[in-house]
Length: 208
Image (cartoon, rainbow, N blue to C red; front, side):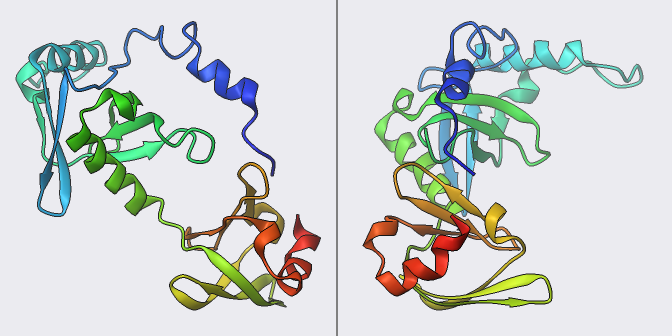
């Protein structure tokens, strides 16, 4: 896999594509307030933002035996989740905000559009979701029943990973920075391939 194509990123962020979609609610410090709620993050929307979502929901409204969605239904979300559109190339841009039913509420176009306190709160949640221990050494890579077993040294200690497909599981993220995804979705980072010892490089270079 290579880097996210720059033209693809430009197309998504171009005013004629994503920004012009009238049904997308862009969240910022003027219409959204993220707050801590125990171990979760909740979201309060302005009346205008809530009305925007209500109008969007009304367009998709089907059930005749239920009440039409109202703006008050969208003023508060007790828990929200975050997803980066471009986790490697633009980690602070175009961050989708979802409710617990996986319905998109809106998009944070830029984290800088939030005030410092809320920006730090959202960034903390993103770092928690996308946490990737850094790999400092590769001890061994062995094949077993169609899987590969990696023994590595990380900032979290010595770990053993199982990869389903070495070629698809290694993600290039610009320069010689690499992410490795194991078979259960955990990510691990090689911050700089050239910084690894030669023995580690020889074990991984066949897959690059």
